[in-house]
Image (tube, rainbow, N blue to C red):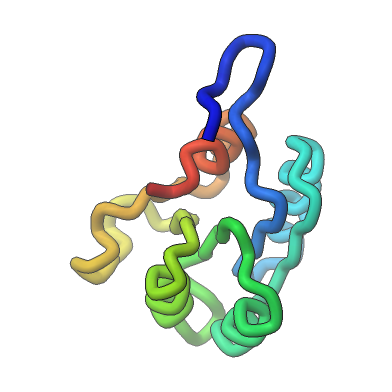
Length: 127
């Protein structure tokens, strides 16, 4: 990847998968990602939908809400890690959210997150 410069912004992922159970938040993320120049954004609200979306077409990057309605997104994180697809966790619960040790070093965005923080996470590709 060519490094970012003042006249050339860092390359953004072309296809982003948003896993978020709140439709308002998902739409907000989707609008902001498209505004940054991401070409394709897909939103799903459950682990099963996310795994199906990944199997149908692997994304370049994913945003994972940790706490979904009746489940957590760690099975999705495991699948993405196996496929070497970068992702970040998104949570409204802050540091007290329990993340399994294998994902403790993964980047997190706190909800609500600023557009600058979201864009920086995309450019860094989630480590």
